[in-house]
Amino acid sequence: MIVDSIDNIDFYKSFNKDIYDGLLFIKEAPADIALGEYPISANVKAIVMEYETKVDNGFGYEAHQHVIDIQFPFIGKELVKYVTLDKLEAYTQYDEAKDVTFFRASVPESEVVIGEGIFGIFFPIDAHAPMHCFKVPEYIKKIVIKIKC
Image 1 (cartoon, rainbow, N blue to C red):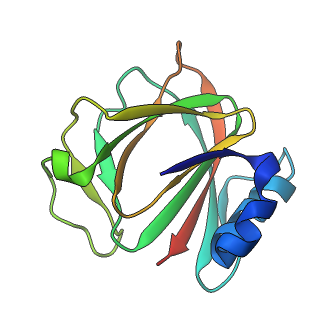
Image 2 (cartoon, rainbow, N blue to C red):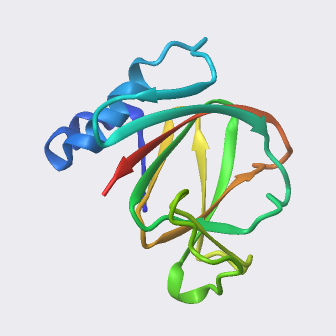
Image 3 (tube, helix red, strand yellow):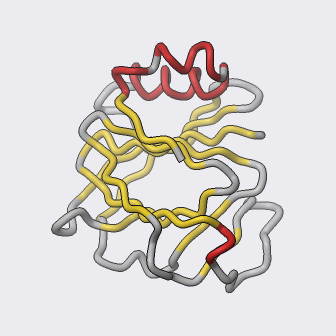
């Protein structure tokens, strides 16, 4: 997991081209971008979504085997819980079509707050639980970058 400021995206130019391309999309996205899916390259797409954060997200943790997620609320803030996969028990079978497995909630190893210029990058080894509120539930509009790996 990486947590960083969108102001630092130049670092990722030499780190990984796909991650950099996703971060560049985030940085250049207009505030009024429509909800939906946006192809960026053969390996990268953006999904723009909106929802109310909650005290309990209702599904626990998720992890992907073939996708890196970059998550960035550009309206509002969101608490994302994190724990390594070896500390969780799956309650669903791996869904190959959606590249996701869901895991029972547990005590997180870490919690990060994203939004207000801060993004999170979650790799296949990172189980993450988005949609949690920071202090109180609030509306967020968010870009999730999906990078094939």
